[in-house]
Amino acid sequence: MSAALRTQGLSKVFGAFKANSDITLSFEVGARHALIGPNGAGKTTFINLLMGALPPSAGEVFLGEEKITSLPQHARVKRGMTRTFQINTLFPGLTVLESVVLACCERDDEGSTWWRTVSTARRQIDEALQILGLLRLGSDAAVETRNLPYGKQRLLEIALALATRPKVLLLDEPAAGIPAAESAELFSVIASLPSDVCIVFIELVLEILVELLVLLELLELFVVVTVAAALERPVHRRHTGEHRYLRLRLSPND
Image (cartoon, rainbow, N blue to C red; front, side, top):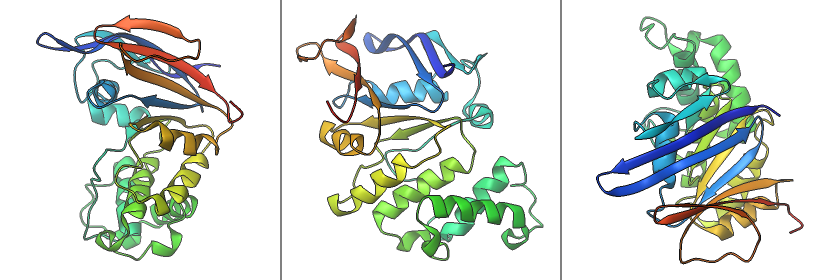
């Protein structure tokens, strides 16, 4: 299967500190992957390199067959890669539906058409309602974002990401700050996202990924652990500075 996203020798150095070193990975179309490791392991730095928020010290990033290493963030989004953040970046005064419609309008280069009201964007409204239905937010369409429970705010951020029609979706700790009672719904929704979208999760807690794993037929983990840590499972290993990068393929029956 062809790669939706791949890196070749990707590295990021801050002075004498190697945050990422010589990372070569390939993410297949429609696959689900997880990037897990402790604080400071370089997970978010890696996502920032993929999205263009940080320039790499070395290496390349490819979206499909196109080299995008030098492209700015907005150009990568236009080409089909988007992300969510650890901390919500939403519009608290807008309703759930207005937020997603505006994201659809921006994708269609209609965001600067100031003389049109949101209510006239019929095509984008219909698409936004479909996205909200997929994420089980349809009943909250008229609710102001500030009044949503935090778990639903996380779902809304994913809805905004889906409004860009991504080929690759990067989720940075999507369960961060969500009460355990609300996390099950979040994981169930993530598991039902479109099968043609490649999804890469960042997570700090292995137990959260195990909970998500039971909803997926297969999950690939790209694990970032300290050199002192040990794994009993046989894996391919590549030593990179102060951390070790490991790839695991797990099934729900493991």
